[in-house]
Image (cartoon, rainbow, N blue to C red; front, side, top):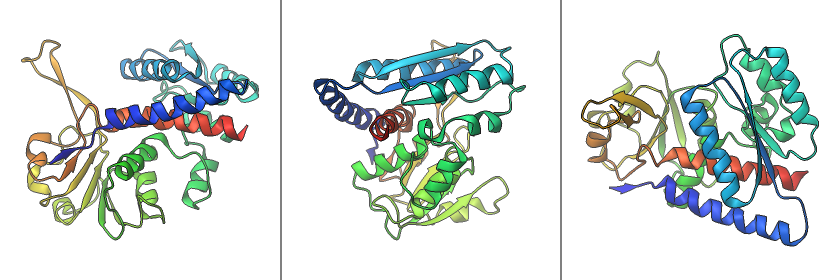
Length: 290
């Protein structure tokens, strides 16, 4: 069994981007500028946005963090998005999800300029992705593809099972894995909460991508020998034996599944770091386009 080390690969990608930023500076050009908007005080979101800002500094990007209070209205948030859309200094920006319940996420995401949508969530970019027209790919699915490619895992003709049908991970990665690309050309089955006999499906899979948000859902008895496992989930679970009172687990029961797998992502340190690296890659792409 080999770990798919997202921390190591994301570090390589950041070094590559930092090299390009150095050349941009040497030419006297403006360096890429990523902005992030966060509304409220969700702990996981604050941690994630903070890591994005640190990553920007690490590779030489400019970054802006717009931190808005929980009671921010939808109109006020739309006004902030309009400012970012029209600010020529900003190459790309993200609106951190989830948003407070009184704000319509769909309305906010569609207000983002598609040319600055480095999260790849705008319907125009999702449509381009589906039609295989060059565009910003959603950061987490993009990171999964990159991880698979850099470990030279064969996907052509393989049976890939995706657990979860969210618009952020499950659905886009199922589309991308079926397309004509290096980490693609696979036969893809999308499994969700209404799927019957899930174990029968997962036991036939050569590659399983798990993005359900259910801690340790996939167990060793549900997979075949030498399966490749990509675990997107990350959840805090109470654990009195730990100093902090909790442990971080994925959607895969690591101990039992790792005994069967040929490759598996750890949690943390697998897909998470790749998501941030691909967000930076999309921002560099946005800078080049502008």
